Length: 314
Ligand SMILES: Nc1ncnc2c1ncn2[C@@H]1O[C@H](COP(=O)(O)OP(=O)(O)OP(=O)(O)O)[C@@H](O)[C@H]1O
Ligand SMILES: [Mg+2]
Image (tube, rainbow, N blue to C red; front, side, top):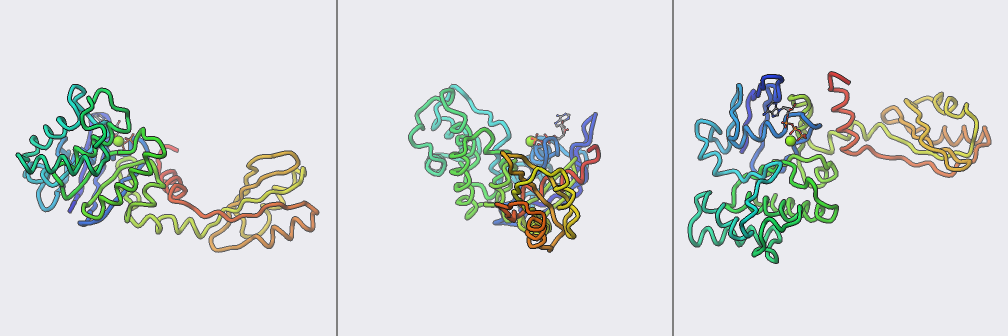
């Protein structure tokens, strides 16, 4: 559905996108991730034909986004980073206007608008002025706009930006539902959302792709390296050193102190279980131990680890 080959965008001051290649197959839900300034929006704007690349090519459903821009755009529903809406229109009127702009007429346009209104939960507010909508509803109108001509591909640039946790959940369900019939490329900073909805993630950093794969695979390498959280009753300064000396332990962090209890976070080597050694140490030192818990790495841990180890100036 999407084919990107050696795509670059050079601004005067900097290279925003640096020779990236990737493909998205029909039916995939792909999370497009990366720190601020990584080049996500720039890539998306090239894919949607809003800005030309400096070099390289991109096509949507076999149509080059520049030489066959109209055909390529017909396949895309695009929700930009900051949804531009006409404040002086009513929701339904605006969506009708957008449907007609996308070439839909009469019954077809009416049906497109009705379906989008239904899917995005806009029925109650369809007669309201856009200027009077809350942020969450504006986002929904932006999504309904992207959906109005029932495009094969949805490209959503931070669609949940500014939504409250309840709305984020609803949005996530909506994305899952849309994923049944649409191919989706979604840029977001909410990684739990990606873990729950995407079959694949592409991580961009400083304009380059630094990871491309299944979200579970990306964190599995980290998953085998456990983090263990323990709580000990000890005021001895030497405790941290003694724990660090246990074979298989990579790093010990003193997290916080509550009363006599000290909370440590411990990173271990991959595939080693140090819990028994910790209990043994606590016993011999006569330190009461009231918690020992293994934590698994999340996609967020993987993201932080991957992007920080690939950043040139940190
Ligand atoms: N029109 C422009 N002129 C010059 N530089 C630009 C322009 N647009 C973007 N950039 C630069 O290109 C880089 C990538 O920006 P981009 O907006 O693509 O990042 P992003 O990954 O979408 O970040 P965010 O998560 O903050 O939305 C940034 O350093 C940005 O300052
Ligand atoms: Mg952006």
